[in-house]
Length: 396
Image 1 (cartoon, rainbow, N blue to C red):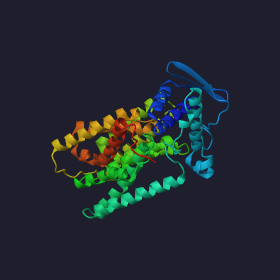
Image 2 (cartoon, rainbow, N blue to C red):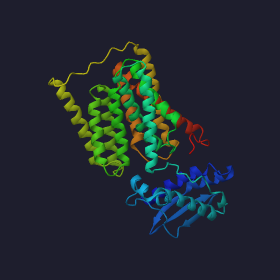
Image 3 (cartoon, helix red, strand yellow):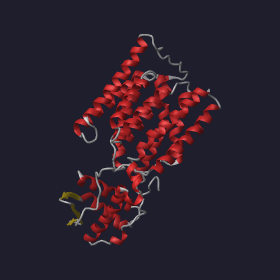
Image 4 (cartoon, rainbow, N blue to C red):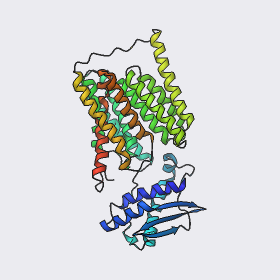
């Protein structure tokens, strides 16, 4: 396990190093990347690689890395400070290891340098607070814009949709290219929040669907309240089903199948108990919602009449579906995949959108307009990273 972790860390470090190396050294670096093998030995690691048909080997005299240490999370790292942050420690140790590899390969190790900034971002609490402030400010801006034309209740819907949408989108910035979202990207993602209202569609169903997706991606990164997050995610889908029934049922089924599959293949990612808890909470929540409606305790949701034609919304939704599917398919090419559930949520979104298109529910298709900016953000990151790999989209 630790050997695999070090392998991925070295690959990630190499991607950062390539930004500062001359072209001939980049070629050598890529050759090492493609051939390197790492084995865990007692108290240390053994590395093997090949350059120009020549095999090289290096065994570390000690183990400077801190993998799977107790307390390796944002809260404890913040208390320890930057110098004792495990992620920073491992990041710096991997740079020294690359220098040793270059020395062993008879290459110029002095070329091995970069800006020292973590490619996967700073995990200290102060960054989380700054990010939250940015989200609130952007949500307030869109709230004020919507007040120009729409009632207060609709503007409040926009505010909460933007907040949750940005939280969900941020889970992707940590898996692809490991770059935090810039302000213009956040505004792009938030712009989709106004589209359902423009077409006279209630976005509340998508608000709870987004909250459920965000909680699910959050659960993969949180060890302390993981089960609670899975349970809350399932319950949120039950609330979403009140307004967006077709889409919600499709995405719950897709996610349930994916979670069960992952739990069978890789129980370190998702445990069977976590997958079952999500499914049980989603089923119970949806069933309770249908029960209270059937007994008259709560009125059945009545959708407004959509004035726009089916042909145009079908064509636009088909384009969105194609972009979503393409981003899911190409995501693994352009970045190291640390977290699985954000990426798989793209697949579930694609399948749910396809089913909604199949049923021809125009109202719910217009509701999916909240994802317009988010899909544009994905396309910008994925296709930008695919075609401009030597020019990073975002620099820290």
